[in-house]
Image (cartoon, rainbow, N blue to C red; front, side, top):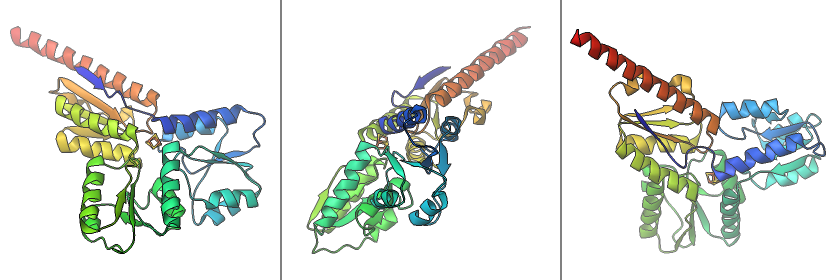
Length: 307
Ligand code: SF4
């Protein structure tokens, strides 16, 4: 069985940077303790467990930000903002409540947040193509005073109602499906006279999505590795499945099933931006093992028939 791994599989630059920053501060005696991440650093339980082993806690983001910070006041000294970024209030509230902040917001997300603020302050109407409940999108919306209009799907695009007299600025979640963003931006441009579109899809995401399509075309079976709550992993799964029905979405190697590969010669593997390299290695090793068992089975059945 031939296995092809996407060259863009696994941690993107933003997630890798955030993980490295957390590892570094966990070892730095000058950083005030306890340290806690606001939410999951990445959508991957393995990574979360590794971070816990470094002595870094996780704060569950429940209720308002004020309520969350109230809960940990006095128990945590340093707070970490994840690569997804957050709204501007965290900076003010952390200062007011005496927390030190470590900001691992991905520079690409930072750019979209600041575009949202810049154009909102110029009275433009902000449209975000993305999932309104996703942490990154919520953060971007806060930079636009929570006044952005969301487009999550075709139906919302059809029903969109914007103020035709205002300048409209279209931004997108950095991990959105590129085809949908292009399509949605074109529909909005056709419908309204003053529209500015900022291509805010991250290049890493773009490459990953383009490559997964190609891998799905070239391989009998596709395996996409990512957590169910990881938006970009889900997107890779959807894109791959559109091209190749034999696409399987797993989080860990122990979810692989031997029968998926029973009549398969070529397997393509892709993984979301939050999937660590050690999980990808485990999946490859497991598939290789299945391939070997498979070839042993074929050999022995061949022997039987010749007897
Ligand atoms: S997917 Fe792109 S924008 Fe998102 S964290 Fe990674 S590098 Fe940054």
